[in-house]
Length: 383
Image (cartoon, rainbow, N blue to C red; front, side, top):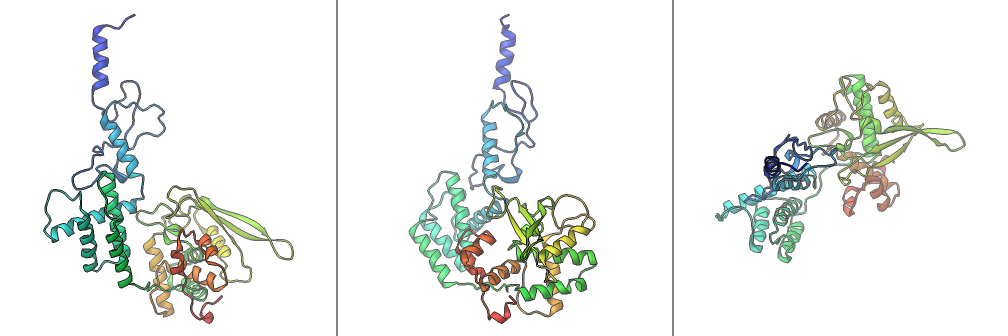
């Protein structure tokens, strides 16, 4: 039966009204956790609703009705927010803040922060140099500034010839030597040996012996071993599998296969896994230490390394226990959580492995691996 004029008018009003979160009337149900602002670029280059705070549609819905530009703008904000890691968003916002400070300091007050000119970008580099910023920091700020310019479709001069030369000059004139000392195999064994003396319990000592040895032998970043603010790449308990490998002379020897779902250089979560074989003649075999920890670990999911009460070990706790052990040993120099990764690369190079092999083991994507290899006298290596 033909629809009445009143019913047709109601349908027309329903189709033309703006979208409201939780509104399930009309042709399809939509679910949004939050109702962020549209994704228009503000005058200062920010993208409202981008990043973790942006609204998210129910990905299980197969028919999302789109009845307003605001819905599309929210989806633009969501996709843009998910395009980079949360830590990258933080860097991009710091870059914009630094550029605002630069403009204020030199008396540039025309409306907003963007757009910019080529000369302004060059002066921004000079400003950061005079403020004592490292070349790596300046490069990351230029990347952040470029992001905001390109998102808004504005001319981008951060890759201008003059800017590139200024950045090159900064790198050459301000070479900063990495002061972090590598944790070599001999130092690692001494650290593992004193953990029962510096930890609060036998369980804690067993936990950190396993965590430190795994960090070293698997070339791990600290955020892959334990959790921290903004970390989402930590090894999970369910990612650990025990396997047997053929042993020399027959028989088998135990090994562990550890899955890493994502990482700093694998933001899309393709995942990888690494295999560690046991060393039966070593008192600090990583496979044996990890097995000893898993035997006493509470049987719950989540991060691999947790305290007896079930809470995940944090980056700060990992660092604190390491520094306590270093202090107890009376070691001199600057040791940090990244010293395990630096030490692993250094020991592998000292053992004769190629740079390409070390890159593969450590999942480096560039030649920066060369900066991790610190070859001292062979007697100091402990390999």
